[in-house]
Image 1 (cartoon, each protein chain N blue to C red):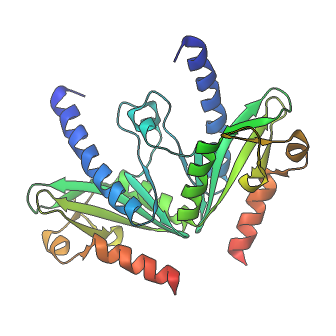
Image 2: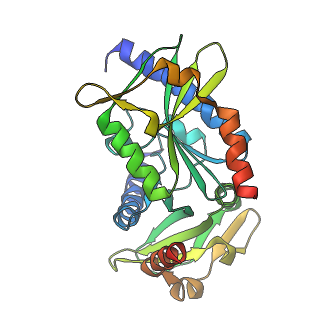
Image 3: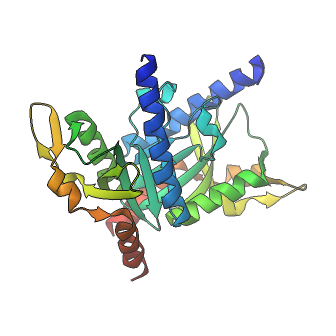
Length: 145
Length: 145
């Protein structure tokens, strides 16, 4: 990975950390994937896994300076879905619009297949998506029912 | 960490990988802690976390060439317990007797406080402990009930 690539990755990592921190503060057990460069990267891990009283949420993290299409490799989606099925949880794309402080969470089932090997998420779906705090509230109220 | 320390850590890591592999093959979603040296080590992670349809198991891994007392720092135990309480799961010490291929799993509640800041596990408790495969069977049958 070149210098520019490493820089992008480092920034991506800061967003993952922010998401992990918010979930931790809300009482979740949280695990973040190891940084690239770590030997563990040979194995697949979701960006962030958060567990609250038996409910598992799996996140792929994306951060943009403005609302934009989200592209994801099919292989990555397959692995996230496999992980959350094993865990009996749900998987989401967590989209952060940098500067807004807002995180929107979109279930991976909302992704649409575009060109071969890729999935994408329309801007309109991101705009209408649930806020992270509402997802957290929902998980907690489901557990406490 | 000196050369000897790094070697021990590498071996410990191989045992964690074996435990993770067995749980993965049994259908669990599995996450291992990053290797030491990784920046992520500043944050606490259990050695192995395994989730099966909403049931979370948290493991601290110990491998010995022969049956022996297990010593653990209080701080580590606190963190494992905090993690599994958040997750609504259970935490175990997974003890491998190298060469036997056997893993015994002991709930952290079986630990006894010894000298200040440390917990230990008696050999007799390890000998009588549940085998990993029996724990796995139990978790699966609980889920499918």
